[in-house]
Structures are given as structure tokens and as C-alpha cells.
Length: 198
Image (spheres, rainbow, N blue to C red):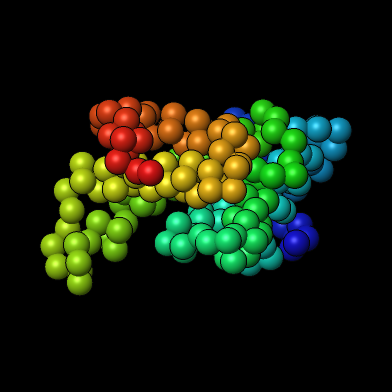
């Protein structure tokens, strides 16, 4: 991970404004905060999670894991392919810090911030809203319906095929909570998705 090389301005409200920063600036701000408060266990935990989530070029591993779990949904699972499928899904759940990780308040906040980023990115994405061949665009509600189904697929259907529904439950609850907070009729859309997705 890139080392601290400059002194950024310290956010006035910590850690709220930390999460509002882009990844690179977030890393520098966290380094500076730790320089001032080296005994902060919460900030040490934030650094640990930062280094698990982002690589050296600040690509988001949580987002990559989400996309790979979407890909996994399209794969048929048979007795022959199940071991490989299980390995691939477990790899992505580890990337999301769902497996082999202690769930604490700092991780839950990281997941909540990821959920916000994920929902806003998808619902404001022109490619995601585009109809087939890029002709026309889905309405905001239809786009939200599609993403509600994606939430159920990625957080319930895919891990459920290998018996890991319970392990995904905390992250699923956090994403669903943010969805209901950010999207009009979000709770209703999630209930529709639950009925539609198997």
C-alpha cells in the first residue's frame, strides 16, 4: 500500500467526512489522523479494512466482488461444477469481508458506505439504465426494480447455493436498509424482488 507522503487537511468531523472522501484522499486523511491519534483502535481497524478493500491503485475490491457474484449467478451448478463454484463464491465473500472476518461496528459502517456507493452508482449509471442495444432507457422505478432483484440474487441466491445465506445476512440487511432509505418505495421493491427471485 502506498505510504503517506503529504499532509492533507484533517476533516472537521471524524469519521463521517472520512467516508465522504475518494479512496486515495481517504487513505491519506486516515494516515494523518493516525499520526495524531496513534492509539485509536477504530482508526487502526479502518486502516486494516481499507487495505483489504482497496489495492495499490485504489480499485474497489468490494465492487469487484459484487460484480463477480453477479457473474456466478449465471453459472449452472452441477455435481461436477459445484466445487469450483463454491471456491469462486467463497473467494468473493472473503473479498467482501463476509468470511474469515470479525464483524464489528467499523466493518458494518464500511459496508454501509459501500452500500450507499453501490446503490447510487448503479441507479445513476447510464449503461445500467439502458435498454437492449442501448436504445432508450428504463424508468427510475424499473431501474430500481432491477437492482432490488440484483440485491436478492447476490446476497441470498448465490451464497445460498453453497449454504452461506446466514453468513451473508448482516451485509444483506445493511444493503437492504440503505436501499429503503435511498430509493422511493424501496421496501416494496425488495418484497417484490424476494417473490420474483429464486
